[in-house]
Image 1 (cartoon, one colour):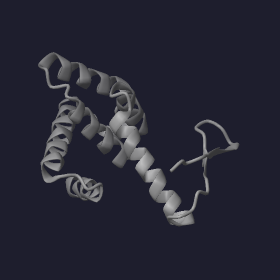
Image 2 (image 1 turned 180 degrees about the vertical axis):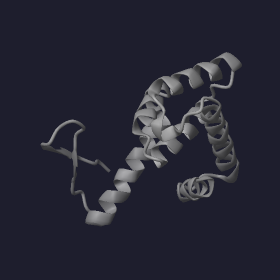
Image 3 (image 1 turned 90 degrees about the vertical axis):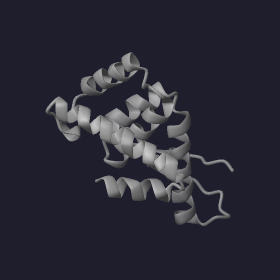
Image 4 (image 1 turned 45 degrees about the vertical axis):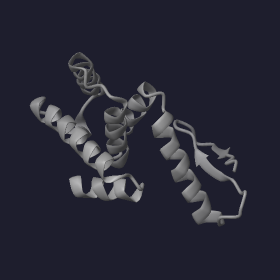
Length: 135
């Protein structure tokens, strides 16, 4: 999974130092999960909260570390963890990434000069909503 995540980060145009930092942050997080004998896919939100508490107590709760773990959780589709961390870091870095992804989707669907809108489904609802992207 490490090499796929590295390719994901390279695709985001991250500099090599940030990629290395992110991969090391994720390795540390995965090591914590192994010590707890739980796979990321099966881990409850409480495990993440315990890990973040550990980071805080050790003074390792850097925003870059949390953003790296959030990106990894997004990459592996561990959405509850992703959303939780996004809330902690105020979503600045994480939401910027979401905005860039949405823009790429809009360009793929409508072209670069279009001001068309993308539709999406809100969580927990069946009715379609519309998201307007501003340039």
